[in-house]
Image (tube, rainbow, N blue to C red; front, side, top):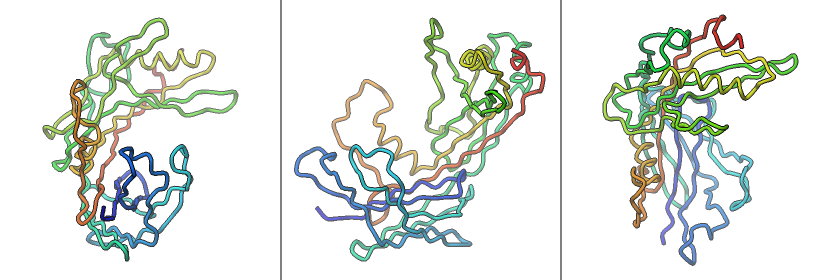
Length: 294
């Protein structure tokens, strides 16, 4: 089997550090890839990410490995910092190795979405004023270049512990499946394929309020203050979504996959160069928010 460069990198606008993993493919004596106990990292590669106005050279770095059940050596990665990619811009990746040659790829970050809450902020500010069976909606208009999206409704709160306060966050599900005898089973939004620029999530008033009450139940002896609601939208471009979809197999749960699917957008090698954008709209809850009085 010929050795080829294998490159993995996902650019994001929500951090100032970007990572590129560079290794090679490998073979094993049998049929189990986990028989390989040594990562095939490439040392001394030249890694750069370029945009129209600038080029960022990545430096070779080692990180502690949290899970040493298979590999024990530190994680090697090429890092560009400070570097925060901008939505809507195209970035070109070049990786060169003296022994294995040069591979390239390119990716465009999705543009920022528009995010809104319908029929308005009053639905989350005053849940007691609405019928528990009523609904409100997280609405967003996505970037034309987005192929996968995920919309989430998050609530930030603070817990008083003695004289200090600790930050917490919970996600509101769009469906509570089971909530009885201490058993909580809920359905949360997942990454899905974009079928149109306009999308969103529908939330039931009861589900929103019950999620917050559940937080109070988890801290019966502590003061809890609900601070803000965060409407978060995740968008990924084609390469990221195609790789995600390939790795996760068929979308239905009854099919059995007998082939070995692979996906790459690295020219001259293997791997993935993808990107996503993460944007949010925050709304501060009123000081006299009903559940803060409990």
